Length: 412
Image: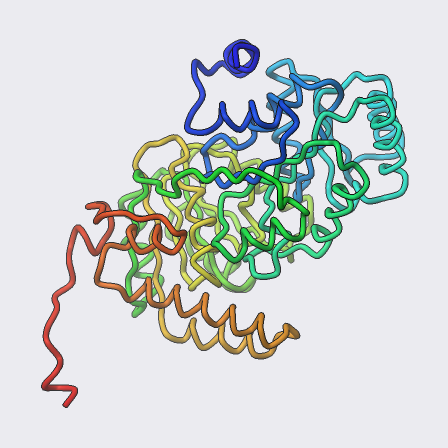
């Protein structure tokens, strides 16, 4: 513990560990496997960064997004940690130099995309390191991407089970901010983590206020909501690319600096908009779910949804980008039953099997029930993740309880 605490203070500048961080780090440093569920902003990355520096060799971090890798490596380099990434943004010379540094034991952490990790070239490099006892650990970030029941499934993640088969003595840690019980089971099964210790932190983000309104005039409703957040950074999520572009243009016309972000924009534009959002104050990002995984901007004051997400898991993940600095933030959503119709059509028209469609319908029903509840939203949200909670006093149904009436006679 003293070694890990020394690194925490000397390298990362924190005085003490939070929650189960110390226990996870000790377990992994000692060679154990772990599945870690910790809310956004809970300090997941330290759980594998510190063991990578304590164990002999290099920690291999599997990360799904190029921008996220670059942000994390930049931060580590500023802290004096020997870190690098390998991905498709580099030319052959740059990638070859990183591979040389790996062979020469000049790195503590290497970030790779799952597609790169599973190439014969990279597996050969890891074999070389394993034979010299220079593989410290494998960290699988955003592990919910492995689950077909999850909200962000990536097919290439399924092949990561090969790590357990090929390197059975190298400890592994899988991390995610969101996974209901079904998704947890699938992560464990697909990644061969049956013997892993499971660490679950509280899913509660008490500084986030939850508000849901029925849609009648969504642009006016959004503008009314944003009146409280003039000059603040935030994210507005929309279901379609067209709606993202139109909403961003309309917000700019209302005097709000807004940038669009979706997979239909070219990579350079997406990169520019992401960098502006991270580095400038008061920018509103209007985006599809293509934006956000791993975005580390502490002062996001609100996350607004103009359309219903796919599930409570997706909603929790997206709203978790607000208030990472611990200061008050708000998750606001407008919804209509038309959203439910669109999601149901997408489920029925998908190529998924009957069992998967049944599960996705169940997740959509749970989200709709959450939208329409008259009870505490936070308590219901936490219960979805198997965590008991009392009324929070910081959601719309607690602050302004809806009026109830006995409809027995009317129903009869």
